[in-house]
Image (cartoon, rainbow, N blue to C red; front, side):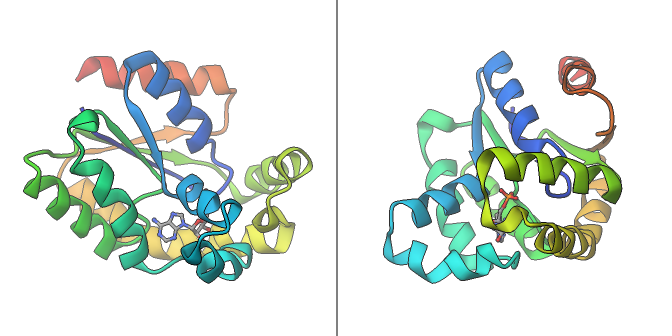
Length: 188
Ligand code: AMP
């Protein structure tokens, strides 16, 4: 199966994607991690995108599309991808369907983690002290949350219309959320 997971920054999509990928032998495709690796490895792309990422802006659709394309077309990952952080807007959602279609695949389920801004602020500050991400500073995190809310709302409608969307309360403990996700995955 191919799965999409999204939620605001700090919602726990990375943590839950890691859990799902281990439990069901899927591959976590985190666009945020791929982009941060470009910066860490000081690639040409990394130098172009670092200021955007550090200031909480989105990277261009074409850059992220190129990154995910190589995974979708790779037999090794066929029907075992977790899209973590993609799509972020409606044109990315349509692009993802097209890319999957061309490779005779589809999305089987979309998980949306819902978390309040108050919880997000708390979690992001905790993560800031551990991971030292530039974009986890409080003001930038709030900006990312607001940008997320605006750009994701048509994506939510898009997946609601195709009956793929499952909304998960992202407030309880990691293990409670994992249990709910497992139940949903096993039901399909
Ligand atoms: P994340 O790790 O998912 O919180 O992503 C960190 C940052 O990477 C975001 O704030 C964006 O700057 C960039 N990014 C990740 N995924 C995407 C995407 N699908 N489209 C555009 N930018 C992205």
